[in-house]
Length: 276
Image 1 (cartoon, rainbow, N blue to C red):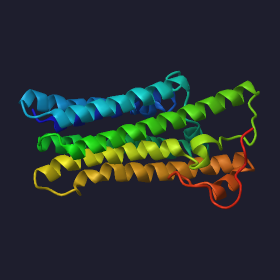
Image 2 (image 1 turned 60 degrees about the vertical axis):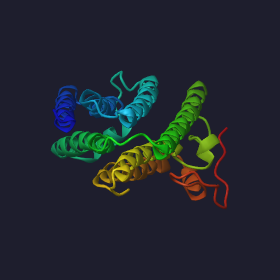
Image 3 (image 1 turned 180 degrees about the vertical axis):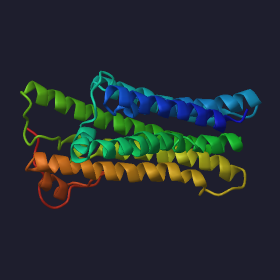
């Protein structure tokens, strides 16, 4: 059996589960709870199909191992923040308050569940390209695998810095000036964890492209839609998140002026507020 139909079946079941449970529980973070899980399943389906076919599955196994490491790290970080205990993403609560009930339910079905479920399939489809073109693992594969791993380490560091800050903030009674993190990686990017998350999936796309190029194809192929749409999603989500932060913390506007939004860069002229 070709692996793509199986991936689509699993994705459909997962999406239906998220939508139905969101209606039953009246909270919409179910897609967040499977975000770090289903891509791992999808990539292993492609890798398993290659192994079963008896072709060279080295590239796909490496891709599956990398995505598994990504999933384990993200699941751990989400769990320690209480993501599996019924806590809803605060941004959905803000949006719910700005919409009529029926409007939010349409948004829930089409975007929160529908679009994001489709996106979780799209970002893994470079593995489909690798399945279609089982060329030998080469130096480009090794290079992009190392790059993926480096971005994974970067996101791990950023999330740990953010976790430590919020723990210190909680210990201080919920207030720690200026109210948000501006040190470590956050001195160079307002959202370094967001940057590294996107960058990993661009590196994953490159691994699929390597397989195609080795078979006489182009570096540019249709699966670029996955990381491209993920980047669009993150930019939109970041802008919305920052609108909330700027309304909550008076010093956030200065931080925005001095610090890059996503790509880590030297601080611009001016001084961002220092974390206590």
